[in-house]
Figure 1 (cartoon, rainbow, N blue to C red):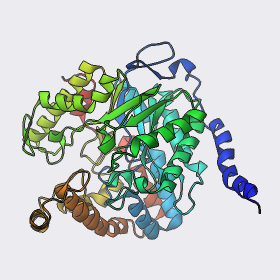
Figure 2 (cartoon, rainbow, N blue to C red; figure 1 turned 180 degrees about the horizontal axis):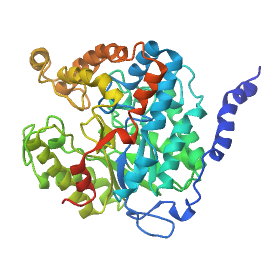
Figure 3 (cartoon, helix red, strand yellow; figure 1 turned 90 degrees about the horizontal axis):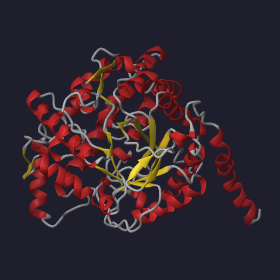
Length: 491
């Protein structure tokens, strides 16, 4: 076979998919072209020229899952592999099909719209669309779930942003890129970068005519250790997508987890540069607010100063600011949580002051951070509640737990490294964070995966479906205080 025929065989499936997939998405009848958004100066506007401030939720836990959101330990792929072994292929598929059908329905979009919000950011995991053992071949069937969320939101006058949250090889060093290691291999292998680009080409072809898709968030929280590779790769993505879809907004996150823009050396048309504005006092380890956390004093002024530093690139170039993630976590301690609500109110106040768009993290979870959490009597919560306590006691979740119960294990390692390796400062968060990552969030978390998966052992098909239906809107409790703050009823 000659080279040209071989090349044709390799590219034909992708080309056929790119040419046909844009016809598959149903555009709601009320999705007029006037709704399409674009960038004009430092504003996001619709086709009439009206300014549109995007405000809403991140839909983590559905098309991209995370341990503290969905209840499992470690990373998504490890959990899925474990469940496939325990359930078998048929019940595994039955569980996840019903899970995805129940996680976001019209009831969710109606509720979000009722709050006066107009945006859902949809994190997606490349694993849903492509197998590592069959790279470059996109599973068209996976788009049914993404189509569903977009169509449901459009019916309820809510925009969506598609967010590639987990890229092949992992674009950052932590679990939320579905990374089973501490190495962001995406930046080390061109094959991974080519595959992510191809996925974006397919996504752009599919949704280029959908006016309720506000745009594409190309890489969630990139963390490239040299600082030199992110912006050139963004240029590759930008140029490839623009050949297919010249009109949708592209959202570009800064380096080091959407906080740094020093290496961004061009401004492109119809692009929004986005940061993530997690306030240190709102982390799980946060102390008093106003007050000291990690040897620094925080109040409204210091939070605002941090935000302005993260946003300096955008303000200096007179382009829009979209805070793609922010929001404190809650402890269950009324006094501490009162401080967390004050952190949130202070953030929203300066977002309003600077007229920026925002998307709070998170819509649904197990009770740590989101506006909705599952009721205690759902089949799923009954199954996993004891495991959740065990996971917390071992400090296995990076986002939702501390090492307070295992300091006798972690402290000697920290002391040894301080003495033996005083100059060791691993990217991106330093020595102590690296030890916690390797010991708690990889070693301990991986050991917990079989325990979680074995909870599903010997379940019937009816029980599997019932577990998945636990994630439906009707089975959730609203965090009323958070709702009141987001809607402006409490300032």
